[in-house]
Image (cartoon, rainbow, N blue to C red; front, top):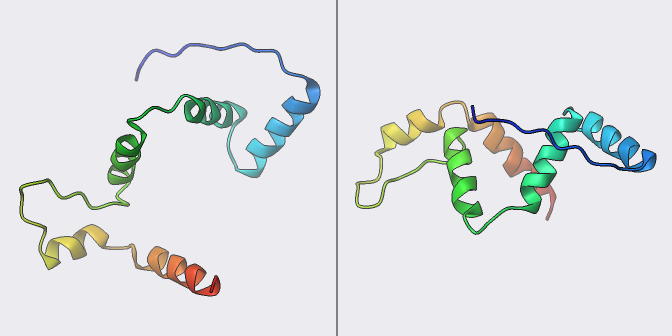
Length: 98
């Protein structure tokens, strides 16, 4: 884990209340919410690659190394094992949007 720093800032009561409410509604701490907002505010050109690395680490994207053969059907099935319900939910959601 990298070193952590504390940031102190002054905000008015109304903004603080709105931040707390949003964090609670999302099931997150105020710290997590604010950290995420700050990270988004300073995102750089590497953002798509960072997103891809996070999605790969979370098992939501299958990565194929350039210059290598694509994984076979068995390997893809292994990588996607358990994703069916989530995929079905997303397909159902997209079908309702038409």
